[in-house]
Image (cartoon, rainbow over all chains, first blue to last red; front, side, top):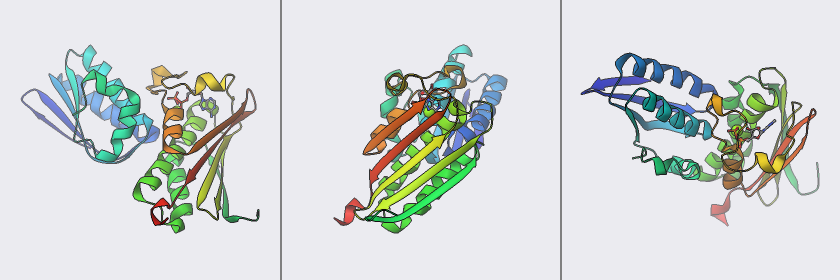
Length: 99
Length: 147
Ligand SMILES: Nc1ncnc2c1ncn2[C@@H]1O[C@H](COP(=O)(O)OP(=O)(O)O)[C@@H](O)[C@H]1O
Ligand SMILES: [Mg+2]
């Protein structure tokens, strides 16, 4: 996973498959970087995600709460079309974090 | 093998989270000959991933156990996958299947596993006995594009 920090925005480029197994590692990496850098905005770039189950929804909800605690906000960008159905089931759209 | 069954398979593996990826890839390989659409394949893989994850995080919790998958393909390309554990079981299946219901919110579970299985398969059946285990049957018609 690559990360980029610019103008107070931390972007994490998530790639490969998101399931319960990989979510644990992604969460540790993203939270570690966010706690150190304290960005105004955490951006999760999903363009490299090839598979996701509901663990991906848990991952996004968890980072949303984490960023609230750190006084910043969250955005999920470049979501591949085929992953949209899971996000629709989740109601995450109502939080306004999906782009 | 029953009369209109084209193929069958059985798998068993330990409840390690690395096997979530193994299980969905194995099921995908099993149905590959049906020439499923990309969408059908991804739906089935997602549903299997949910069912297997539930065996690991809920069925066996922190303990280790064995997960069993049975697969059957029928003449009409209907595919039935059963994912089973001998874990703690579910006391109230109806409640467990409600969208957003989860007993592990602290572990960042979204409570959407059953909702995903139901939305991505044609039929989902759950049988569970507290203290004995849970069996989830996923049914999906594949290869619809060449009808
Ligand atoms: N194999 C299983 N063994 C025991 N309990 C289960 C099993 N599968 C599901 N459950 C119960 O059903 C609930 C809902 O499951 P699910 O919809 O997949 O959401 P989540 O996994 O995010 O909690 C779980 O929180 C758990 O209490
Ligand atoms: Mg689940």
